[in-house]
Length: 194
Ligand SMILES: O=C(O)CCC(=O)C(=O)O
Ligand SMILES: [Fe+2]
Image 1 (cartoon, helix red, strand yellow):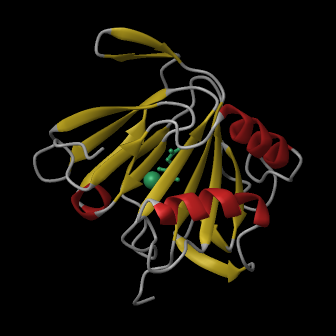
Image 2 (cartoon, rainbow, N blue to C red):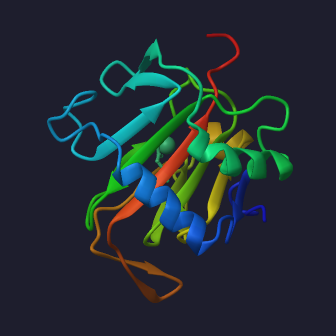
């Protein structure tokens, strides 16, 4: 469903099943995480995994081609394409982010080295993501539920920043949202011109 307040933003709840979520998590937790002193991107405070390309958070540039995306996300990629997302060309970069309770991400627009479509699959616990219009500062909160797919295109991709607070408890429509460990899978392509 497109969010009328953030043009180009789509949110698909229950994009994957609970079983698929468990399976993805088990696979990811069996693999090496970077960040928190571990290479790559050891300077990051949150843990990450990267597939397809290696992106440096310090230089905000792609540093290395790692190879194709791993087979364990084939089902997710196929489903996104069935929904018309990355329909023309499949995603080629996957960033897995892990947030502990009270960990967030500063307001940012995704690096221009990446293309015009960005998706994020949420696992484990919900959180509020805040979108702020770059010219007016007007902000809109979006609830990212576990197993939902967020799709950013157009304005939502380029003309809004997005962020996640460091709250232990978020509020959404007056309801408390308990934060906890959250893992997200962000899919992108490289920008055409780069
Ligand atoms: O955790 C998320 O859903 C979004 C992550 C994000 O904004 C990013 O890696 O650029
Ligand atoms: Fe982002």
